[in-house]
Amino acid sequence: MTKSTDLATPEQLRVAATLSEALPYMRRFKGKTFVIKFGGHAMDDDTLADLFARDVVLLKQVGINPVVVHGGGPQIDRMLERLKIQSSFIDGLRVTDAATVEIVEMVLAGSINKQVVSAINRAGGCAVGLSGKDADLIQARPLRRANRDPGSQIERVPDLGFVGDPETVNPAVLEKFAQAEIIPVIAPIGIGDRGETYNINADTAAGAIAAALCAAKLIMMTDVEGLLDQSGTLIPRLNPDEARAMLRDGTIDGGMIPKVETCLATVKGETEAAHILDGRVPHVLLLEIFTPHGVGTMIVDDEGTLGDDKAKKT
Image 1: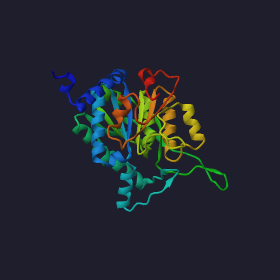
Image 2 (image 1 turned 120 degrees about the vertical axis):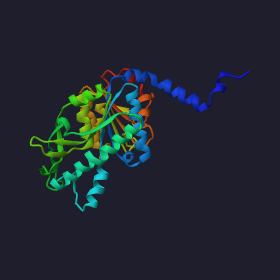
Image 3 (image 1 turned 60 degrees about the vertical axis):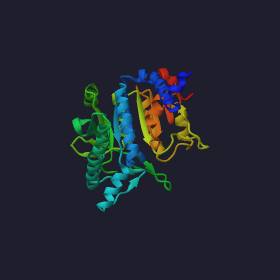
Image 4 (image 1 turned 60 degrees about the horizontal axis):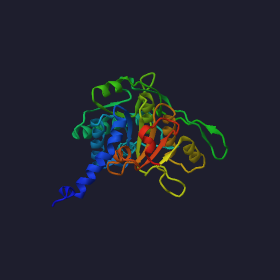
């Protein structure tokens, strides 16, 4: 006599089990907004970019409202090199003069934005591209960040040109998109008081948008597994106090510092959790959101109300 399990292959059973496992998280997050920063190697890899687009469409299909904010540093570098425009950095931030900001806007709000939009639409979604200048979405001011000279210990505030810091975010247009089942794809360009253009770090822009929308999650896709401890082991889950301690003792350093600072600023508000994921992993969004243990690092306030998230990463 044929057993019922013989009617399905192991692969079919695995897929069915995965879908069943995802059900509590689909119910938990239905109607919630996730702000997803898309960047790193995945943007330059056509296969990963297409998988990302499909995953975003799936999120929308199960009732989650994804808002995509994309970066584009390597693409900007390549265009500046082609045009023989020199670029310099201070503390990891690109010094952006008038000539450079034109190129930055052209690349971010032009070619890259439309590539991401097209990929999502090909996957069956309805995506619309915009920048922070559209509908005055992101009002920005010049970024002023002091640094200390290691020799004299004198603090200086370097002139970064048209590098912006989000001052206000107008969520109204994004809320209308959500009602219309449209997936917004945002280039991190802001507008100043006099209509000037500002180049905003994509992580910073994503955090500001997540805070303005009271998003349930801020998700940052990077080129690392997540946060690692001093032995190089992935930390699946930590609270803000633990993250600040890692910043103080230098465990978190380099380019991860602004990412973690943005995550901490975001979870201080209505956002329940911030995630740092490795965008080089296929379907990393689905693995983190819809499985009990996830695959990256989740920063969450232990005192917050997390519902089913309390079972994750323990």
